[in-house]
Image (tube, one colour):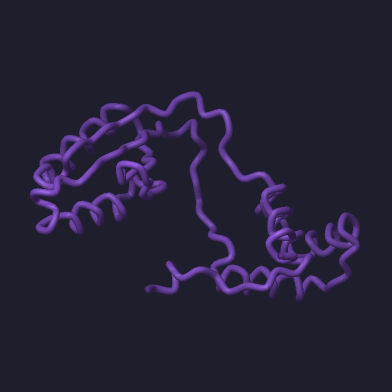
Length: 175
């Protein structure tokens, strides 16, 4: 297991949860600004050096991931779902999986239960590029793919994380 895939081993302090909430609101906040917000909003008195070190340690431990995600106005999004063909699974499943995982169009790649579907949210400059990508994917890995479904994702109504999601970390700590 790689360090990236290992779950973080982190003891959350109130300070850490507050920092995550505020960085979710504004990822560009400086450690000095965060120090002021912690004091004013959360009654947490720490130095900006402590805030900076806490962010660095949480980042290094993998508590949160940083990603640059372009504004949804620049790209179209598609949901690609597929299953593997059991007949050719052994020969090509890894190459097909890595092809999608490592492709620059892939934003989010995951498995879902039920029918054991592989799914990915992908970004393309236009529908023609998406169609061409699917065609090339089939050409390269069609023997191992049993079914590909693609769905157009349009009218993205929410794109981001709400700071309140971190409130659940208090409950997890207290159990």
